[in-house]
Length: 289
Image 1 (cartoon, helix red, strand yellow):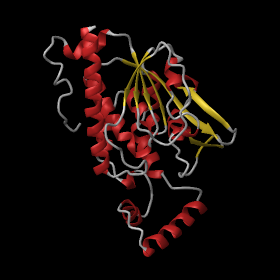
Image 2: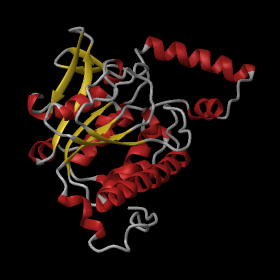
Image 3: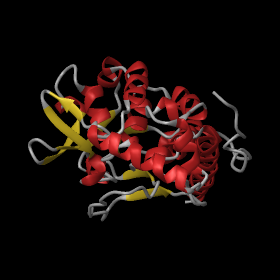
Image 4: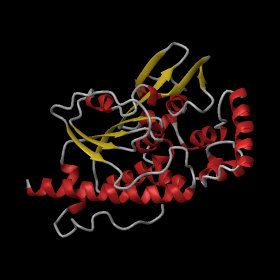
């Protein structure tokens, strides 16, 4: 895993600094949807892991479900490396020249004509082809490891065929389909639909992009929430009696459709640094209290 500075630089003066948080009650972790901004979450998860927080329940929507699954199966390091080396072609089958022009805000007539032709093709094919992303996810996620993990896991998606939202814990998802449901949670509206048992699914952000309820309903009071401010519906949650530690970007993140490794690396570092700052402050307050 790529090195960053030590997260406990400001709390190491005291004894047992790394173990400080492990004596508390178990924490829940909520990961918001946000596409390419998901690198921020894994940077934050690296800090959470280093500081010894006991994450016992995870819930995520869209990219938050993808990242959350990696957390549950104990592969934060692998997730970090994947984001660090991310490229657009590892996510979408697309015209790289057109993609780079649009990222560079090149809206010359030639670019726009090419964009129109590409959009027509995408519409005719039912959405962007994310076969590379599906292959990547299926190569790193293990249904057996996720199910056998002592860490709880919940995701949100939308069943378009049945016209209903799906908020499901891992034990409620049919055997052999857990990874498919995680992918379905991240089925961005511009992507081709995920099909499971003949039913079409779409991104859970259209129903609940910040599923705090999936963690709080399992009895967790101490909850770390990783924000990306991605597009989606934020449902009201009764936070009375909850201790929510929110880790939010201290700088603007890029577009949710920006999957360049330059942007991902910046977001990884920002997420790590923001989490260090917020969690160190939490630990100091815990120690002084």
